[in-house]
Amino acid sequence: MKEKTKKCIKKAAKNADLVLLQELHTMQYFCQSENTKYFEFARDFESNIKFFSKIARECGVVMVTSLFEERAAGLYHNTAVVFERDGKIAGKYRKMHIPDDPQFYEKFYFTPGDLGFRPIETSVGRLGVLICWDQWFPEAARLMSMAGADLLIFPTAIGWFDADSTLEKTRQLEAWQTIQRSHAVANGIPVASINRVGFEPNLDSINIADFVESSCLDSIESKSQDSKDSKGAKNADIQGIRFFGNSFICGAQGEILAQASSDKDEIIYAEIDKNRTKEVRDIWPFLRDRRIDFYAPLTKRHLSE
Image (cartoon, rainbow, N blue to C red; front, side, top):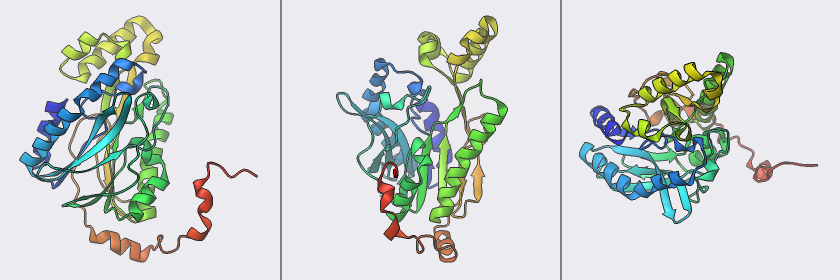
């Protein structure tokens, strides 16, 4: 996966100043089950830093990565590391909101971040980096915007279960895109969301040797489908997640500038005009009209009687 990602970065860098990667892009999405052996993946954090630092330097691009960080024994984070054009680390963001849903058992692996919602200064602007589950919380986008972010960035891993109905899949996809486009509108700021794409099996439900030997996840999908066809619905609920892609970039009014497909790896490009943020905020002054004198209750979990 790292070598494949490296090729994509080099290709993208020919036409881009800023390259964004999806959540936990160095490995398969291991959070589909709770297993202590997967903490071993975090041991690669420092080597991954060196790997992507070198690529950023060679390509001369600012790059947003998403890595599994071992901070100390028993202390792990889902961490975005931003590299400057010269390969130096411009800053980090540790995922703040951690989900715990069927096959998204991230609370088992990740400690909530402690770096707050602070944009990372780079040569292409102030990047408001958040990660996946953070995208559902308007407070995170607001605080990043208030702190001066020029762009909100969401490395993401979200998908469907094959057993879901077509209607349910449509609702999930539209909700996912709507909430993030709403962040753009409410804050007058561009948003980029970079999602995984394709089927990934639950590692606990397959032969790990088959997984390692396969050249791509598609071959695993074929084997899983064969198993499903031969053994029936019994295996349907342990197949895995079909990440629905649809990565997109939208402008400060929520307008779509570029969008990927739902079923294949690809690079999408967009040109961001930072002056557009001021223009939009001048005509839609949401920040001006906020009633901060009445927002104190937002710091409470729930407003009970």
